[in-house]
Image 1 (cartoon, rainbow, N blue to C red):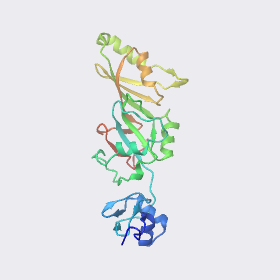
Image 2: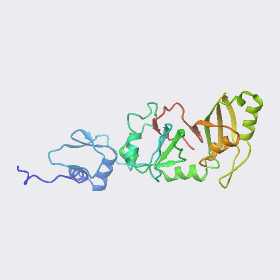
Image 3: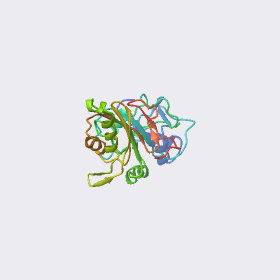
Image 4: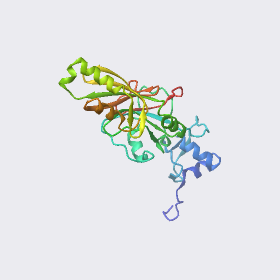
Length: 257
């Protein structure tokens, strides 16, 4: 058959709907759910074009169920820049949340899909210099729970400070803790007091309800400290719990913020 006579490639969803048969919307759900292979390769885009001679196969284990929104937990590396956008761009999500850097200890049982990297909302975002626990979600109710109730959700931070001969004095170290625990009026808000403790000579652990940008830095500056690094360990009841830097996992069904 000449190229002029060869049929034009058609959309995968149309091909699958005719092949099963099923409705076009059901075909799109199967494809987006990662249940369809073209020539042995999983294809998750219903708009993908396929030729007549290509083999289109539906996984025998395929389930007709709507895609559920997901929430991802990520250990943000130091100095990783987050774009100033409402949603994390799909291209960046595909780069950060790969199968390779998915936490080996992820026990969620969720099959990773391309759709899970679409329209991810960064919640309680960390600044570029900060590292640690970050949350990305497709679920607006999860985002609202963290942001609207931020005064009730506790953030736990590990703060590294610069060497200072004055910190060798116990009285000075006690004064730092007292300063950090004082009530704070910051950026137009009355901020709940922080619970602070020394973890080592130059390392502090802070637990603060709420997450106003610059709040941790301001507290430490008020206490006369120079910060060298800040890492978030916990958000509500969700912690890093051994999650390596740069790796991610799905939020477990039983986990709550």
